[in-house]
Image (cartoon, rainbow, N blue to C red; front, top):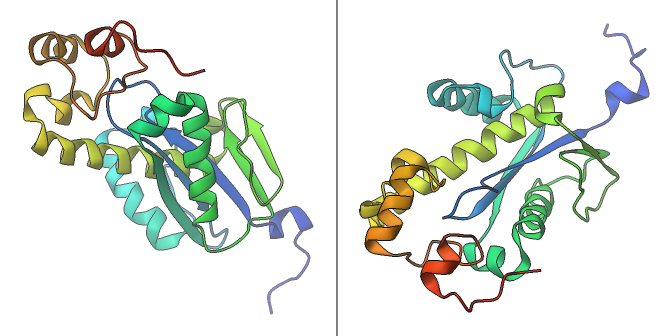
Length: 204
């Protein structure tokens, strides 16, 4: 017979939340929310930036198979430009938590700000390296966004999005200068703003 002496903290349904894609010049910002199952351990969870793409994909499969709940959401380029990137990232986080299909007892957010959520929340700086549940969310957000950027590459192959995922690499900047920005570029970000229109106001 299983012991019922577990602590209240262990019984809590804790949700980890993280985003991917705040820094790039192109594409949506993604967020994921994950509630891990304490009875189904997942080895190797780390901040997604510390993992290779292959290991992230392998862990994504395990997280989706073993988690009690997970969800991925995004905020569009239009929302990024209208709200600013921080508010858009928080919006994506809120959408991910609301899509879980359950209300967590607590949400642990990577970073310094919390979105408005239907449950208590706590921001943890460097949380993707300190809490496995946030690491799991960072992996799902990163793999989902990378997949979207590969899809967008098929529509806009001239920018090389499949390689740099929209970040401001020398190759991406060179293609921006050569071809100019397109609809998936964030107009509120430099140097995209300058190439679109020097008079375009920045989001608050």
